[in-house]
Length: 103
Image 1 (cartoon, one colour):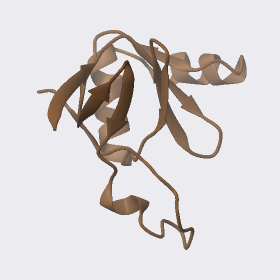
Image 2 (spheres, helix red, strand yellow; image 1 turned 60 degrees about the vertical axis):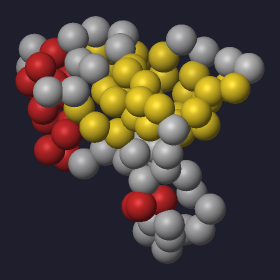
Image 3 (spheres, helix red, strand yellow; image 1 turned 180 degrees about the horizontal axis):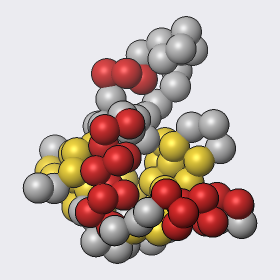
């Protein structure tokens, strides 16, 4: 396992959160406190977020750095999943990556 840093990414929401960067898209477990901290670091106001969501666009982050653990083989990432993935909301086989904000 090694640490990967994710920068310049989109936060996509369709009932669950996804992190999209380069050619990767992963479902992520994000707590409200993490999302609020991300918005603060990025300097986004509630109005900025409202306008983005009303236009059905993802929220783009370029000041925030996320940290994940995993492996890479032939350009394919396998990332450590969150403990919350196991039977999240009673659903089995739901994989969400475990991530942290770089402080």
